[in-house]
Image 1 (cartoon, one colour):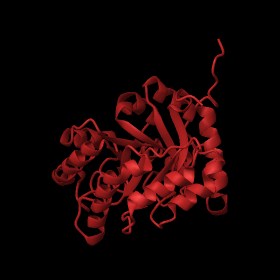
Image 2 (cartoon, helix red, strand yellow):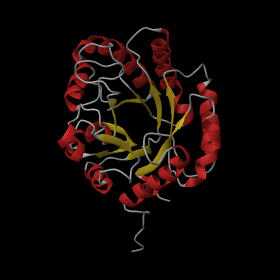
Image 3 (cartoon, helix red, strand yellow):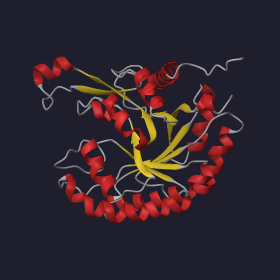
Image 4 (cartoon, helix red, strand yellow):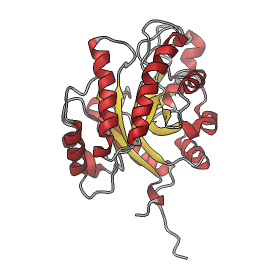
Length: 300
């Protein structure tokens, strides 16, 4: 298959926290996924990442599957023991990304807990300027997921890169070309932001895309509002939510974007548990169709 065929790949995330990432890749590599994002939650648990990377690559074997991005999700700005493990995890992922064949490490910015978002900027600049230098030396990009983790402008625990006003602030603090976003429409829809026009403005900063969607219950909003007891939005696997991913991928292509869209599962209120992989494979096939299906070479 030509390189152009996979200028946009569709894959999924694989937990690397429990030491079974390579085994998991081996289990699901024949389901049609074209890429994987191994990810850690807060800590690598002291794993040998060079060895893990080699085992993940071996699990893929000769299949046409890539690992473009590693995930390291936690709060590297604060200084509890776990926060320091997250910071070290970022360093280890940056240093060892090449063992996976990856060129990007993604996660949260971190946050000074329970303070207004702008209070985190000095600490953000301190930590991420150093990590940016480390990444540049390794030829690695850094991508922040646009996930609020239930935080907002006034307070929060994990991340400040969760809306466009914050992106303006953080990219001003770290103007490096290799610092950008791990973007997904879901986290904008949770704020009732229209994600489609956002692609036109920000696609040059999208280094990785998560396949996650949302269903907005406008009837609940009209009756109960967004801060009531009834949930007004659900995170969904692509194909089950409100986003027209044909439009998303068309806008990405128009912007000249290429890379992987890796499905982030485990959030859909319906297609979960016993239906998790049913939902993920549906999402995989749906996103491939939204991409235009299989690449067809003109024989002329």
